Image 1 (spheres, rainbow, N blue to C red):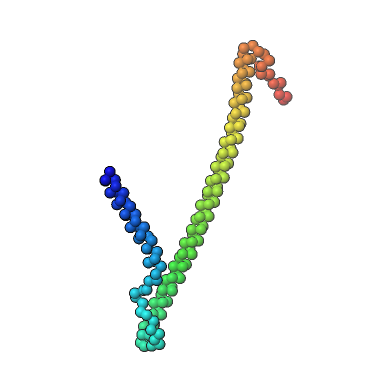
Image 2 (cartoon, rainbow, N blue to C red):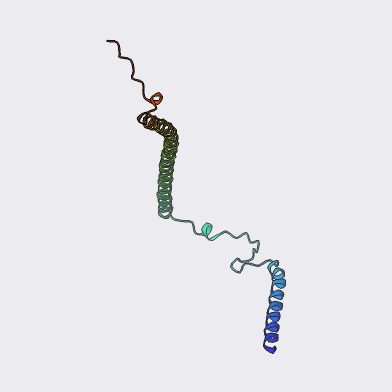
Length: 154
């Protein structure tokens, strides 16, 4: 009994601690956080390091060459992406047309099988009737014997 009571008290105290944490968490989350890396704006109008130390013509040319190379690479990537998208759409359209053809084939097959089943059922009924007529004819019932067709004119 004391063991159950101790477990209940431990569970209840753990629940109380968790509840207190969840109640206090929204209060701390609402306080704005100050970024540690940014220096406060002093309002200074002093020139930036780039303005004080402009790049040389060689550095400028190297930067422009790097920018041009990057632009060419990104344009080539965009063209490749467009080609890949076009190929994907063509393959998707081909797949969809093949699936439509398959579905039409399945529907056509199902119709043909249903028609075959009807014809077979009719044939089986006629064949069963014919067998009964032959058996009756052989048993002596001449009304059920097949009539010989008249001779064909020549």
